Image 1: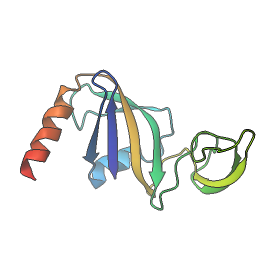
Image 2 (image 1 turned 90 degrees about the vertical axis):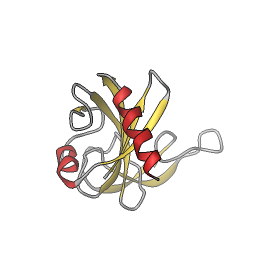
Image 3 (image 1 turned 135 degrees about the vertical axis):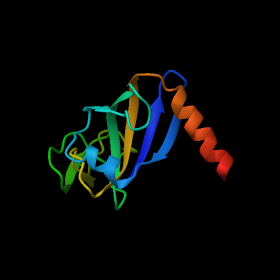
Image 4 (image 1 turned 30 degrees about the horizontal axis):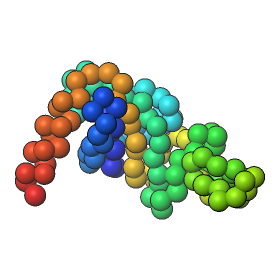
Length: 127
């Protein structure tokens, strides 16, 4: 599972690959839930802001399930209207995280995010 962790203080996003043990921690959580990121750095906390499933469908906060479903959208996550008043039926994933979710977007709310930058630069140096 891929974690995109955004740090609003530094205006940067860090991509971290979570192993199977840590990815199971997120199963059952919902969008806007606060999560503990202590497996990355001690005291680091964040809020789940979005994600996408294995086929690339975005998670939508209005769908309170684990499954994918077609919703009539007028804008927001999953659809950008090109004309005023345009609505379209689009397939989106539910807001509950399952094992089918491949990517989770998280915003850091508490803790020292300097550790993220250190880990990210070490990863780049190995490449």
